[in-house]
Amino acid sequence: MVSELTSMAALWGAVIFSGLYHGINPGMGWPLAVSAALMERDHKAMPRALAMLALGHFLAMIVILLPFSVMFFLVDWEMQIRIGAGLIVIAMGIYLLINRRHPKFLARVHPSRLALWSFLAAMAHGAGLMLVPIYLGICAIAPDETGHLAAERLMSSNISIAFAVAAAHTFAMTVAGGVIAVIIYFWLGLKFLSRTWFNLDIVWALSLVIVGTFGIYSAYYGH
Image (tube, rainbow, N blue to C red; front, side, top):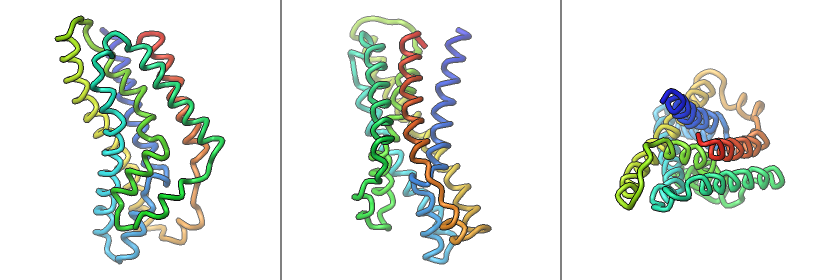
């Protein structure tokens, strides 16, 4: 029981931490919130922009997580699915390490469509994939049951967990990105942003590899 609670706390901590990490990463959109407030010369534009970015990110997480929540065969093939998901995340990380060019189609999305931009950015960078091994680990921590009824209960529970994971992750991302955006807007300004732009592409790719490896490890050792 204690080990299960510890594992659960660690997995939910990973959900929150990944959200904070995504929020800090400028590639997830907080500079667009700063730009919106500066262009409109109204600080109220910032929370509106952050809300749209959060909506797009949340939808991207749900699109990735929900298919796993409705897998009846997750009951019998849980470890194999978690290992497979971990391998996919690792492959995505390696691909981003090799190909560091940003998707050109993101530049074609109109700045006013922040929710759409955020959704596409999260999908293109594999942000949702990062959550899959963690999400499957959370779903796996449950009493052992068998049969069709157990599968139905598992699916119902997993759908709720998918929304909870996406919501917690997105909230953490929005808070982290919002804090940075506020500091830039009220104290540092656009010049500071242009001079100190930092790129986390390599760190992002490596984090996918690490999370994928963690997912495989936790699946193999039954966490």
